[in-house]
Image (cartoon, rainbow, N blue to C red; front, side, top):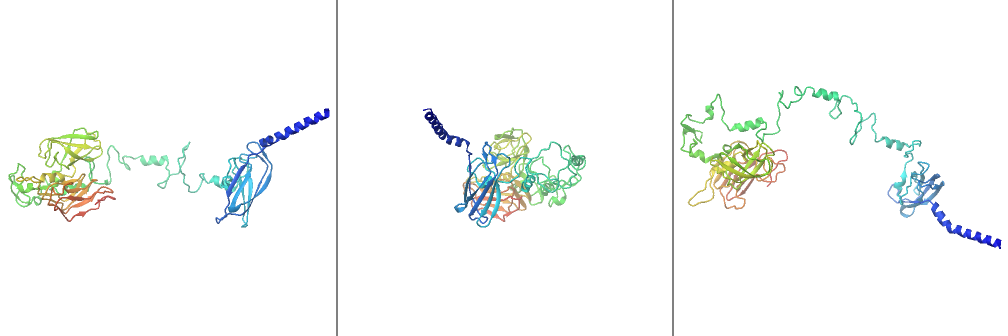
Length: 495
C-alpha cells in the first residue's frame, strides 16, 4: 500500500508538469519579427534564388538569449520573401547583426547586414543596415559610415555652402574680404564708415555731393525733388524772362503796351470787353488745359478715410460739385489718391464754395488737393455751355492740350457736343486703373455727339493695365491720328 500511494503521487506530479509545460515554454519564447518583401533584380524583374541568413549568439533587448545559427529562405513566386527572426535591434552585444547572402539564379551573389526591430512586419529596406553605424565607440567603422559622417561637417579647406542659421558662442575670425559675397571683418566695416558724411555717404542732416544724383522718375508729390526732364517739360510752354522782361521774339507780332493785349493769333491789339480778364472773346472760346490746373492746401481733417467736405476760398473755373464724373487728386501726405467729387457748392465761378468726396486713404495735415488731370477736365467743363430756345444738351468749343506731358490720375470725361479737343504735341500719361479718356455718357449714347479728338497720344503708366486709352459712347465721334507711347516696363492699356 505505501508503494501504491507513492506511485499515485508520482503520477499526479507528472500530470501537473505536463499541464504547466506549455505556459512555461510560452513565457520563455522569443517574440519574432516577420521580415517580408519582394526582391527584384537590377533590370526590374522579380528575383529567384535563396537568401542565406546567419547570426552570432546574442541576447535580445528584452532579455531572451538567442543561440548562433543560420537558415536559408527560398524566394517565392514573383520574388516574394518572408522570414521570422528574433529582433537584434538594441541587443547585447551592441552592434550585433544578421548576415544575409543573396544567391540568385542569375549568378548574383550579394552580402548585406540586417538589424531587425520589434515592429512586425518590416521590409528589407527597413532592416538593412551598415556595420559600424552603432554608437559604441569601441567598434570598427566602415568607410561608408565615415564618409557619410564627414559629408555634413565644415572642412578646413575647399568651397562649401552652409545652409540654415548658425550661432557662434565666440566671434569667428575671417580674413579681409576681397569679393562682394564674403564675410567682412570689423576693421573693414569701421574703415568703410569712418568718413560717413564727408566722403562715401550722404549725411541725413545735409551734405554736399560731388556728382549728379539720378532720380527714379518725375515727381508726383509737391515736396519731391524734380528731375531736369520735369522742369524742361513744365517750362516749355512758358515764356522766358530775361533781365525782367519777356524777349520780343516770344511776344508775337505788334508792339506791346499797357493798352494792348496778346490775341489768340499771336498779335498785339486792343483788348476785348471781357469781364476784366484782358482776353478777347475769341481767346476765351479756346481753352488751354494747363491754364486750368489748380492746387490748394486745406485744413479739413482727412486723417481717417471716409466721406469728407472741404471748403475753397475760390472755386476756379471748371471746379464744380455738380459734375457727374469730376475727380480731385489728394497727395503730399499719406498714399496719394484720386477721389470722385459727389457734391458741394462749387460752381467754377471763382466764388467760395465746397467739394464733397470720399477718401480711401488717410491724409495727415499738410496734404494738397489738385486737379486730377492737370487742368484738362476743368478746361473741358469750362469750355461748354447749354443752348436755349430750345434747350439742348451741353455744347462746347475747342480745348487745346499744349505740347508736353500731362499726367492724368483719374478718368477724363468729355460730356459735351460739338467739341474739339486738340492733343497735338502732347502726351497724356495715364496713371489710372480706368478708361483714361471717355467721350460721351456711359449709359446714353444719344446724349452727346460730334465729338472730335485730334492727335491724341497716350502713355500707359499702370503695370498690367486692363482699361483702354480712349472709350466712346456718343454719336458721330471722330478720333484722328491716335497714337501710343511706351510706358514703364509692364505698363499696358486694355481694349
